[in-house]
Image (cartoon, rainbow over all chains, first blue to last red; front, side, top):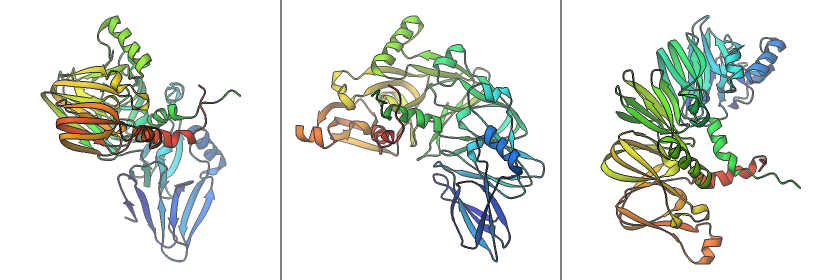
Length: 225
Length: 228
């Protein structure tokens, strides 16, 4: 394997070893450090229109950075924004991993990234879930806030929408509510993703929204003067 | 019923494995994943019926505590449900075998329904400015999961021991406590170590290595203002 995932699980980082001429593509802002013979090229992958669609629908940056080792082997270290773990997922040709857009970190150059329009169910339910579809061949890296709980879905499985990291395209999902109508308004669980089929699902053990909700009361109060 | 604490100490997840018919109760919003056949119901913490609802609502309004809890039932066969707190940190599983455990309210994560959970107001001695504390009394039989902000340290108290009010997770009620000042009145106002909990007796005490209020006060002022 050309990479190691270091400092897992709390503060994981990808240490990617590039052969001469080899490249890795990363989300803008993910680079931590690199050898001086590694060059960075910024581009809108798949053309500006596809990139704009990813930005609009996926919340992912328009621009991706491609890191290439020139004139010898090189090394690049990549990390996501939140404290937590990273998984490297190997994709067979034409097989896909669906990724919650802010979880995407990097991929090998042959991986195709597209925004999966989750349909009205994801968009209008107010859960703000946007998905990127990474299609092989290659390896894609995704990061979590907190640890990653891997679960093989065999039939049906439910994950709170704030805790979804990624899932294989062999499972389908729908946004649904758990419990009765009272639970939706008062239970604090409300809307969840219900997966169906056979495949891997990755959940994160902390939620950025819960952290934001915790911090909200500590914000200064706007004065009216 | 089995509770497993996974991924500790930083980002713990409590994995509850239920046999058919078993139930687990959890803090509202704590559910991370669950088998699809597990059923969830929401109830007010005040008790059953409209009286309980109003009592729960009163607590929410006046005491700022969590109003609803959710109960997960493995009605149609064995299943799994997982829970996590909102802040980073560890969780520990305490086995109730007829004894009581007093849990600081924000540290309660989930418990078997064979464990009774009673929300009580700590009284005026706990109701002091920033040191105000709400307690949950757990009693009965079965596992209860308690979470911390940061690491959890278990302390065997024999005699007396002092803990900052923001660092208490849980304690056995063979310990009595008093909220008190440390140092002089001058220290109370200027040392930011004002109010502490002094425990007396023999029993186990669980403390957390970080104080949520300190963290909130560190990050909050850097955020844009909210409307009142």
